[in-house]
Length: 281
Image (tube, rainbow, N blue to C red; front, side, top):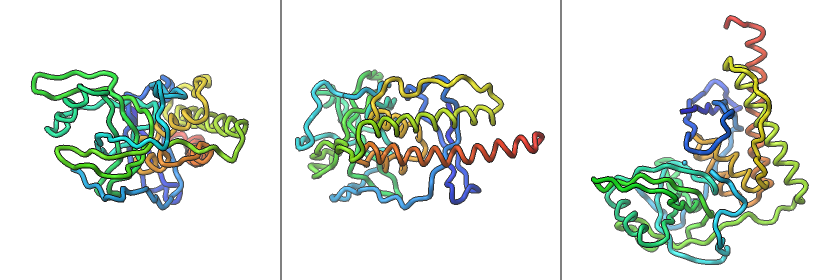
């Protein structure tokens, strides 16, 4: 398992090792890297009903017939202390009784349910991502092993019921047309990719690994799915990921990710200079 180190730029002395989801289909040369982000006040959206409950293919379209943003549907909700992005792949083991009940229902329907971020500090957000079960295995003790793929984002508008598991009415969330032109989005996405390549290169150098030739991180992704892919690599910082998921502007998401990667690059450059000056340290 790879590890991601998250270091607030305002206080580089405070560090925490954070795990990177090995199931997300990252390029093979995307080695463990430190990620540095600016200290922000995270203002995640909360569900107005105050829910309380005890991680591919990042294609441009995630569903054959994508729903319209004004559609209202009922969706089973699975609160977790992690964030799923559209296009992301997440393995799960279902063992709690109420969610085993949910799985039995889903097996008779369309195998789609809502992932939503929840923790003891932040509470439960009201924006999440649909997970579609693309593989499942039912064990003899009625547990389930699942592979889920992120689909559309949604906003919870009304809580239908809480037992035996959460069901909510949701509307679909899409990025609004950006004030920046398409060419500017491409420029932003290319800049983010360049920063990611530099971070990987310096991280490899600091780790004593060979500096490999730059790889194609975008893999022909359009700017919006690419921005979701980049956000998925920040795993271990779920509140930052949730903030990225909630943004409804691709340009704003890419700019925020570019800032994070720029801070990371500055930190790695300084660390590399120290290593060169004091090679035995």
